[in-house]
Length: 200
Image (cartoon, rainbow, N blue to C red; front, side, top):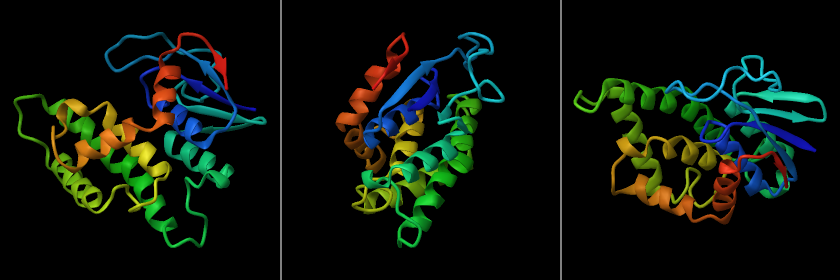
């Protein structure tokens, strides 16, 4: 049984969604974390993450942490779901590139945009990220063209908490609407808000 250590409205929400898309049975273990606004709890002794952050995944005693690593691990663990191009597939390089870019470039650019404040000039890194996404999603409908993958879950989850600074119309807005209509996304958001531990 897979166990995901999770806090609602956090980076691990994307992993709940990924697990729903994969159709994998899993136990969802809620832990407390400190949110950016200072709310939440302190470090949770039940959380196996070395830094007491989320996500943290246990698979038969093996611990995987950090969003990109957990997403890559899970999508490869359950290949029949088709959410990760396999090694040797022509889309594998683009898939890994997108997952790394989302965590290494897009996430920091979004934080930079929020830190700049509403009245400040838009940071160049954020503008460049939006331009790159506009190009990719215009060709879409997904990051790998017609092929939906775990990279889309990572991107959708990241953009979901940045909607206040995203364009109201255009390729990114249409992309997020497509993702929000997925049944697994709807199930995941219901579980994300659930106050008690559960299992699927």
